[in-house]
Image (cartoon, rainbow, N blue to C red; front, side, top):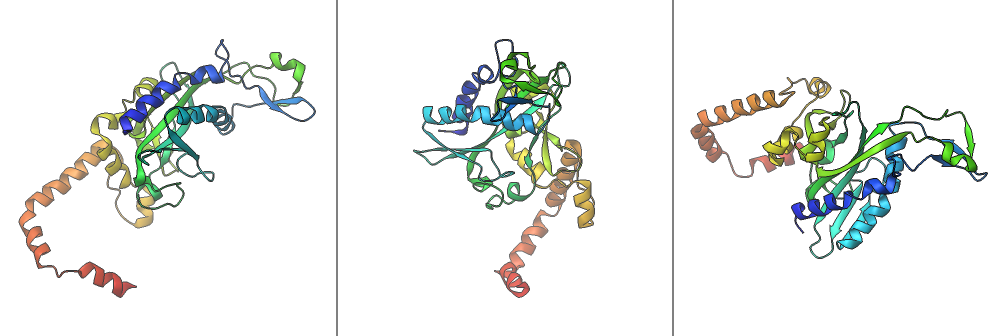
Length: 290
């Protein structure tokens, strides 16, 4: 199974997700938490609680997806590990990473945005297994199953408790779900998820998310990888006492162009200097440093 084939199957499967989490009227089927005394505590529109409950609702559907297509499914072993789900094709041992991301609408055409994982650590060292189930480089594709929803205006008082018989009276906190599946690079933006994190941010236009038409969709995954593997936030650059090489795609293009022009101008000298270098010089230096 290729990455393209996996994506097509995943997109087909996500078409049934909305019916699994919402009523016919489009409201969330989850009303709150229940204790052993049959008392219900309502859920707030918390950006941490809602995504986790959505994940729990969707896991059985991902298990069904794996069985249908001959894929073994593994969950991330710890919180904040990458990815949320690993699918392995039994015949070929090819692995596909899937993260579940959610965000809420801020208008009819835009959302608040998503964070798409770190651009440091395992993303840069693709043979490392730190904070990831398998090294990043072992995956044949990296995908996002996204959930877009709207917040409800009419919500219950969080301080109230409800009896089980009052279930129908409890308003849902979110509604109007829209699911999509896309390769991560196709919905990534050229900026971090927030100013203080080392996470890749997503585009915020709903159409770009659903259709996978972010800026890197046309530039390609190689450019996406190169851009984010060498991206430095302002704080990262200050910590290294270096000038920040670029902060957006235009600055990235200018930075890369300068490098290409310099290499072309000195191509003969570089080749000559490389030929004059003693064999194994780097290894000897490393041994001396140890």
